[in-house]
Amino acid sequence: MPPLNHPPARADIAALKARALNLRRLMLNMAAGKGEGYIAQGLGMADCLAALYFHELRYDSANPDWPDRDRFVLSTGHYSIAMYAALAEAGYFPKDELPSYGLNGSRLPMSTFDDTPGVEMVGGSLGHGLGQAVGMSMTLKMDGRDARVFCEFSDGELQEGSTWEAAMGAATFNCDNLVALIDCNGIQADGPVTVRIEPVADKFTAFGWETVEVNGNDIEALIAALEGARERNGRPKCIVMRTTPGFSIPTIMARERAHFVRIANDEWDALKQELETANG
Amino acid sequence: MAEAVQGGRTRGMGEIVDVEGKVTELAPFGNTLAELGRERPEIVGLTADMGRYSDILPFRDAHPTRFFNVGMAEQDLIMIAAGMAKAGKIAYCTTYSVFITRRAYDFVAIACAHSMANVKIFAGMPGLVNGYGATHQATEDLNMMRGIADLTIIDPCDATEFKQVVRAVADIPGTVYVRNMRGKVPVELPDTYRFVPGKAQVLHERPGARVGVIATGYMSARAVDAARAAERSGHGAGVLHVGTIKPFDTAGVVEFASRFDRLVVAENHKTTGGLTSLVVEALYDAGIVKPLIKIGLADSFFECGSQEYLEGKYEVDLPRFLRAIVEGR
Figure 1: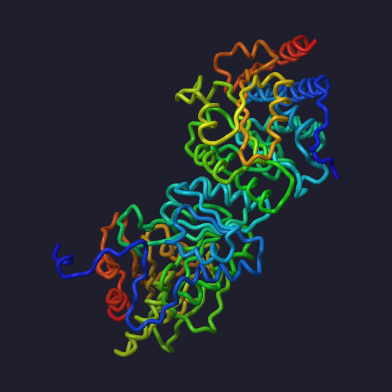
Figure 2: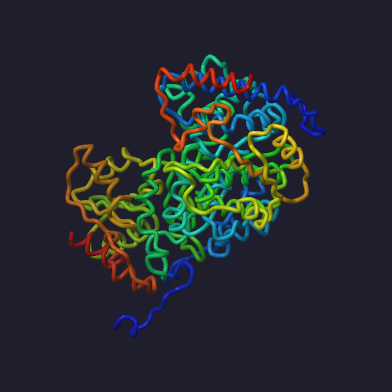
């Protein structure tokens, strides 16, 4: 059985940075040749996923349904490319399955299905994640389990009213085993986030959450925030992550419209080289 | 306004009307769920501020640590129920049908049904059973919900069946949508009746009858009343109760329909998209074409008013059944 995450191991930041780089490499390999995809968001989330899967979460990838596992709920189902990279890196399925991402008949569809090992919910329809995470959190507490629930959702999803219903519920039901990770990358399908949603952190604080704000591409800051969110003090925890779409690859970071990136077949090698250079 | 002057009133919060001469049972949902909760510790109860009006309070009182009121937040109700189900619970949730179907549809479809989550939705005030007008009348819920794959849909007839349904859904895999019956619920079926998920059941037979009535919900009991009344004038009818709308008992309906010259289909719902549409589809596929009278609601929004007033006005009452059975129109 995997170790409990209390007390936590000391974070090996260099190792986590190497994991994040590897996740980005895996994502580029999954996307390469397919011409388009949600690669920008995936690259932006790589540091968070590295921190979660290789430091914070308790799971057994050989036993995805282990009842005492920590749950990671990816609400933005179209970030599946990042999720699959993390799951493969964590051993849920072989890495040689990753190139099937988005292909007909693959169990790694463009938007997450919950029959993929390690995926907790059907993604794609936005505003679904936090409420289900609250239900999981309440159940784990009711059953006296030590496990926790981590829920990623995006700044764009704050436009869905269901997210706020769930945010109120989490505080009402004292979900102190719940950690929200809000990916504030500033983009949505039509371009920049369109409805005024700031100040995100203040809103969650006002709703009864314990809130911190970090650079979501700074692993040390993420680790500190995750460790700070371990306390069981009756309040749900919220980590507002400021991330950069396409982080680590300047060409993608420079795109104005990064929600669904189209990349020509002959550009992929150059992007891979950019990634290595940036992490050299 | 003439009807208003003649009496009758808008009743509160889905109160089921006492029917003269009918035996009723109070709060069969909550009382049965409270009992079942003692046997099944994995059952939790949830409501979106409609605990009192959905009869779930006996469960709350018996199992206070397993009951949650999420407030006026139907999307959250369904999301939390789905999350609880995915963490091992059987989540019984309640609010009014209109708020489940029209407001939380995406969450029922994706968070629940798509994942075969053990969420059992007891949807209050289905059809014309209320006095609040279109905001509270779920007259298209069967139509909406049958559009969702991997969802079981049940429209019980009376308290006898409903109590069995409350228990049975715990063992039906995945998400179930039940039209809730609150308050004083009439006891119509004999205590030998046994609900079988997915099976339509003949409630009334009359040798030599030429008319077959296919009904769901409490319209099935009304059809039995009508059939018995018609017999006093020498007319007979058989009555088939379709308690499970989905999966639909195509074989049972086709077999029943094949035995009669004329058919009547009755539901507390619009005649589009619900039982009537299902029956017509099944008969057409089986090559059965017979005269068929539809008793149900038009594609419209409906007034506020007393139950008796509305049922008379929109012609889903006993005289309408008798006209269909006896006069064939």
